[in-house]
Image (tube, rainbow over all chains, first blue to last red):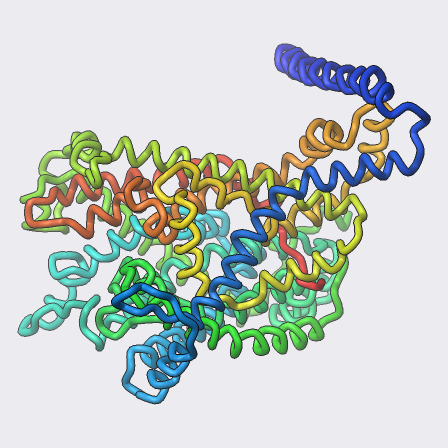
Length: 343
Length: 290
């Protein structure tokens, strides 16, 4: 114990020495150098100037990063959507033919685009309308200290901690013909071939959703547990003594008190309306009619097919234009549900 | 004493009991499925290739832990072996996590503690950029990164210098709650604004900073979508495993591949196990009003 304290003291004294050194250098620099250059008392004006130098010095890198990797990129995205490339000369010209192409695809009901839209909306509904409410219940049971709760919590987190490439690889072999699921299928239907789950249209999308379900609770649970953990114990306890049941406890206490977190998650889920996707690249690569909008775009960029990035950009712009009002309306109503609770 | 009252001791009604039992059973099945799958992967990483193709369900005849050594040689992509992939993952993960965590601390601090013209407008705009659904900036980002020539290079780390994102809000909320008198006493000691930030305020934020740093480590370690596009010739552990599977043929040693898969999971799991409490206590997101 004493040794530990001595060590801690030693550590903090080193820290203090560094601090003192920097302060004295700073002091000397200020009094010996700066004062000679800018003579005169420290006026509020000069204090404000120092502040401004600090603000600019600190923000210059993140602001530049934002201008390049957000603003420039998004302006360029809009430009790409209106650009075409002459195949023979490589000359870039401006056109609306990308949008015409998108509308053509939208008019053919069996196009890959419709397939992608359908799968995206299926994935979104599955994660937002089914899995998200479920994860609130999961978080509630853990919050109420269900038996082995801490163990279950870790188990739920694990899929979001280990990398998806690795987990998807094992999942892939698990469902292959020699794997446990394949063997089980053979035992149940001895006269049939084991289907290629990741390729056949009948199974491929379901297999992806199963994977999403199996691995997708961790992220929300971390945040929901954090939110519920902060709810004042006394408040809920006194209600429990009054004998309210589980549903009223959830509805009258847990939901409103964790609303700041819940509402944020819901708004973000609306932002992700058109980008919802399972790990299509890892599981099916779009086979078995499993394209989603975001995988469609990803594959175009990954494959570097000429001309297609322009159509992808046009399509993205089109969906941003539809999605933005939806998000804003959703946010408007979600923020109205409860007044912000401070505790 | 009311303090000693234990919520868990309150008798639940029979209906609620049934719900809790049902939840327990669901949780148990879920946990077993995960343990089974990971265990299955582990057992198959200890087999010979022939044993694996014969029977994936049996226990290995001989536990070939040398598969884990073989994996370092065998898992090879673009002249990078598994060790090389580990090194690529290491610089990318640590570098990107340090840069992004420092950047959000800086922006969070300046926005929480200093006033300057246009701050509110910028703040609202930052929140707006987070909720706007962007689908198609991938082609433009690709064009920019290849145009700048930072693909397949450690210079790619400059993309991690962003200071405005979800984590910005967490740091902003943290610094809002820190008393300004710490800074004032530092100013009296002769510290300027920079010194005050780095030596006083930044160390005060070590809780959320460590939490965000760890979450970023895990996120970058596991990311495969962006490194596949921008670092295709410098495979990380995640993308190396992906590319290796893409180019597998009948000669490929699947158990050694499984060994690599298992090894790729470990760093993130260990880091999370060590820091889970810090993460839980510090990562809280609030509302999105701006």
